[in-house]
Amino acid sequence: MNVGDRVRVKESVVVYHHPDHRNQAFDLKDAEGEIAAILTEWNGKPISANFPYLVSFSNKFRAHLRDFELEVI
Image (cartoon, rainbow, N blue to C red; front, side):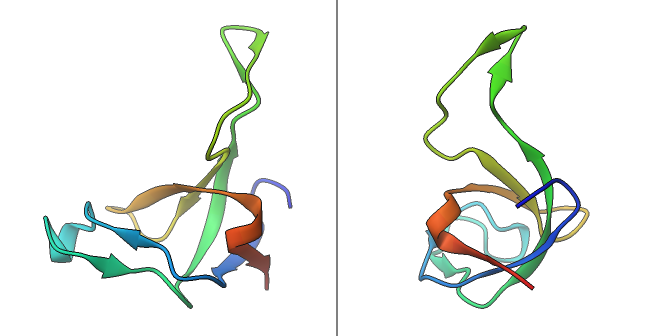
């Protein structure tokens, strides 16, 4: 997976920060978005992020996800 790839959430991932469902459980399963960033370094130093893929689902909503939760479309 690379930055700019279209992806789909293939597993059940519940978030509470979706702008249309604020403070309510919202399942991202089957939601489609685009990889905005892959977090591998910070200030020039390598990091091991728990949720390295930043996926943009809309202009107002982004989420950090793991690789096994996503599939490339």
